[in-house]
Each structure stands twice: as structure tokens, then as C-alpha cells.
Image 1 (cartoon, rainbow, N blue to C red):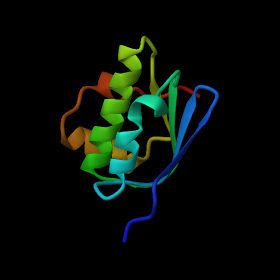
Image 2 (cartoon, helix red, strand yellow):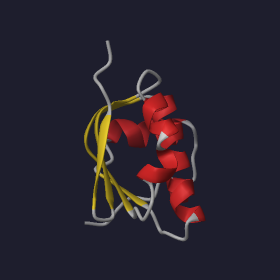
Image 3 (spheres, rainbow, N blue to C red):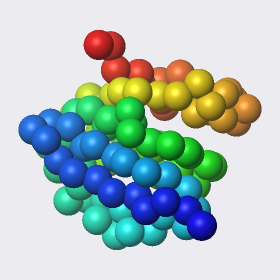
Image 4 (cartoon, rainbow, N blue to C red):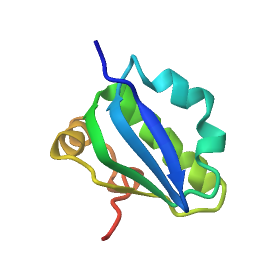
Length: 100
């Protein structure tokens, strides 16, 4: 059974906690526009697991931010998420890593 996915907004950060996978992305998908309003950093430090559905969700969230005129970056990207993105041969600019 998957852990719940929770999220909260702190200033310009969207902080995700739990597992970002096929079982949990639906709730965030329904709230994606509101969740990404004025967000420039998606904080993944408290994410325990990401599958391909979660990766697709992250790509979509970054795109929502870009469409809103924001440069969105991802903080706390795990080695496993980086490997997953490489397996799909995704261009680096699709997974923008936050610098400090």
C-alpha cells in the first residue's frame, strides 16, 4: 500500500511529501493549477518514492509553471529519480535542478 502524498505551499515553494506514484498522483492532478500558482521551486526532499507516473506529474508541474511565466526548478531530486529520467532519455532542461 502506498503512502499518502501530501503537499503544502510555503511562499514560492510547493513541498511534496510521501510517495509520488500511480496510486497517489490523482489527487495532485486535480489540484495542479492551484498548487502551482506562483511556485518557482518544487521541493522533493520529503518524497520517498517516484515512479513513471510521478515523473510525468513533475514534468507537467514544471510545464504549468513555465506557461505561467515562472522558471520552476526541482529541489531534492533523488538519485533514483535522476536515473529514471535518464532511462527515458529526457533532456536536462525538462528536469530543472534547483541550485542551493
